[in-house]
Image (cartoon, rainbow, N blue to C red):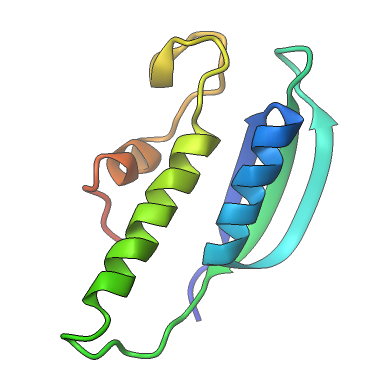
Length: 115
């Protein structure tokens, strides 16, 4: 079983719910709290999720490569929704919550699981 993962989602109610749905497909959720109003921007909400990465049976090398690529692309799409800046300034917006380095690496396709 994988280590627990804590995720905070901040966005408009519609975008936050889409991000939660996508993230829920990748995680076995243990907890989901929210929506709470954003502390920084009116009209945005916060959700807090805790879950574990879904485990899949060991993939057959040839048959499941496309499925794994699809899952990675869906994870990147979920991360992009989670890190979307409502001010149009990208990941380094001073008005948004800071984006952790591991999330930046995942968006760039360079993240690796710690040993």
